[in-house]
Length: 219
Image (cartoon, rainbow, N blue to C red; front, top):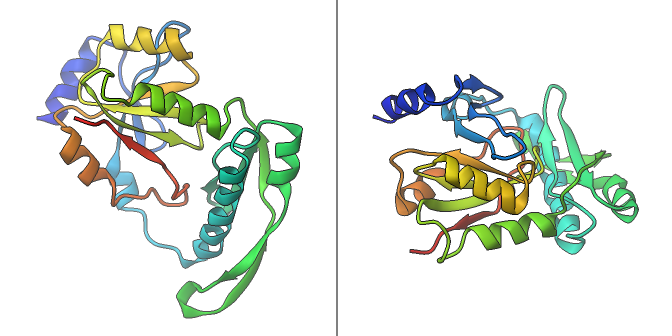
């Protein structure tokens, strides 16, 4: 049923295209935000690699820095092949904070493994504070009833809202209010607020940030 809806929707838009675990149903323009769907099979089929464990611990520490300095930093995330921790920053103060080495001890395969990881710093446009503010505004009891929830995509440095239906009016409104680079729409046809939240919570994409703060729209 969902596949049928995807095909029918795509017929009225540009052809969908795969981009790193997701299908871009409609690309962003200056007047409209991006619409995409998730290819969960890519994440579910990714084998576990114990070498990621030191990076997961470092990611926790980097995220705490962001919690302490939300206006200077944006959420960090992991990349692989090879593994590295990306630490986005906004201000010069944030750059110094993001670049500081992260040390600790991990236990991959039950082996005590001290680590020192130097983040790869990357300047971005939107801070954690800004992204959180967008989610607070968009995912609220008074918002569009099609909005099921939302989260921050650290790698793309933007807020993403989850919807079960989408039209051109919604895409234009979000672009007008927030800008098409700051927010995007994850389209999940047929989902409901309860089933969507329970279905997504257990899934953590491999070698990406485990910290994807999710807002759930109140009924």
